[in-house]
Amino acid sequence: MKEILERNSEAVREAGRQLVEIGAELAAGKIDDALARLDTARQAYPEWEELDQAAADIEGVIRDREGMLAVQHILAEIVGTVLGSVLRSRLP
View 1 (spheres, helix red, strand yellow):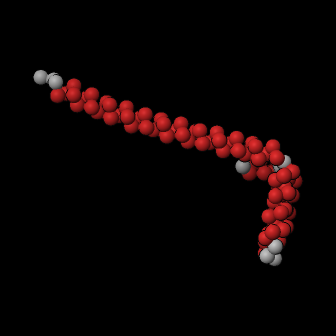
View 2 (tube, rainbow, N blue to C red; view 1 turned 135 degrees about the vertical axis):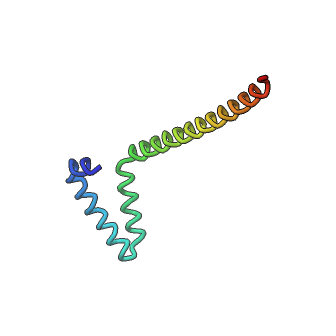
View 3 (cartoon, rainbow, N blue to C red; view 1 turned 90 degrees about the vertical axis):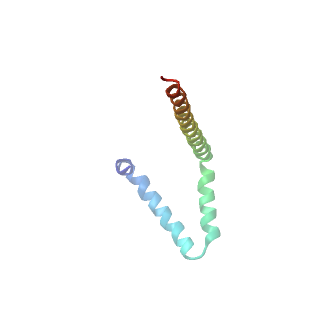
C-alpha cells in the first residue's frame, strides 16, 4: 500500500488537503457544509459509485460462496461420520 501511495504522491497530498478542509468545517460545526462538499465530490464521479457497488456485490457473493462451502464441508463430515459408524457396526 505504501508503494501505491508513494507512486501517487500528488494525489495523496491533494486528498490530505481536502481532508484538512473538511476537518476544519467539521471542527467549526459546519456539518452541512462538510456533507455538501462530500456529496459534490461523489457526484463528480458517479461511475465510481457504480464500481463501489459492484465491488460490494462481488464481496457479498464471495462471502455467500464461502458460507456455502463451509456448510458443504460440515455436511460432508456428518455424512462421513454416519457412513463410517454404519460400516463399523456391520464389521464382524
